Length: 280
Image 1 (cartoon, rainbow, N blue to C red):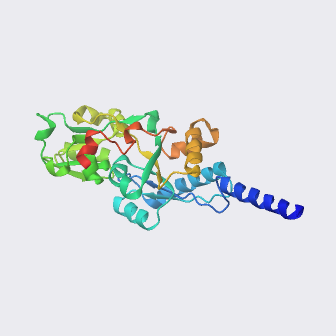
Image 2: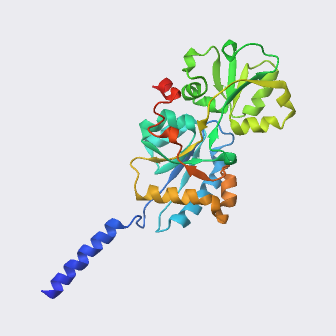
Image 3: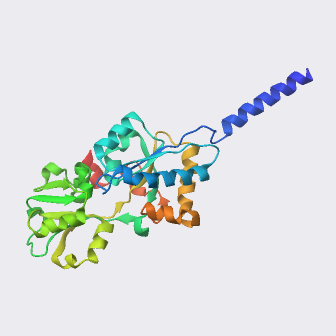
């Protein structure tokens, strides 16, 4: 009798231990980095994805398998998520706003390129342009404009069909400014990092800002589906990277100054924001 009782207690303890273990050997934590409009190819970005997967695999431990994929085209990213949804990812703001409900994304943390918590988009034109941005006609270029509907709402507060010009995506937004100078495009939209790069160029004196967004969230780190113990542990690892010397090179490759708390404006996917009203 004593032997049977001991065996029963051991069995119950083992079951409880398995249930409480946050990560079991053989688990996967695959991710996707989705940045529509960014230059380069998926193949060129793969070494960075591999480096991030290797770093996180060491930090998460417990035999978790992690693989990463990179996408800079909207259609390819959507098709991938429909067929092989990953556990988590880093996605561009416009992609998040448009696809969050469809794929069950929850913002875990935010990226901090250049150390900034927020982003600002600016519409720039030739310096001799006269009038308000509503009087612009022609083509406006920007690498965030591949996500046309979301970008129009974020920057102008109205859907693209209500704009007097056409929004067109480009993988080289700074180079697109030369098309603006030659009169082959009406204007270009630059994010915060691109505008700071422009300020250091001679071309900066030849353009002016005619419209800018308010403060916008940076690209969020998201979890696909219901959050769980793994998502909490992943959040902790990402938030600690800025203070980890082993992550210095990796953060530079990822073009971020670390990861911060999830942006409050993305709680409930931006409820109450005028750009979310525009997207509904």
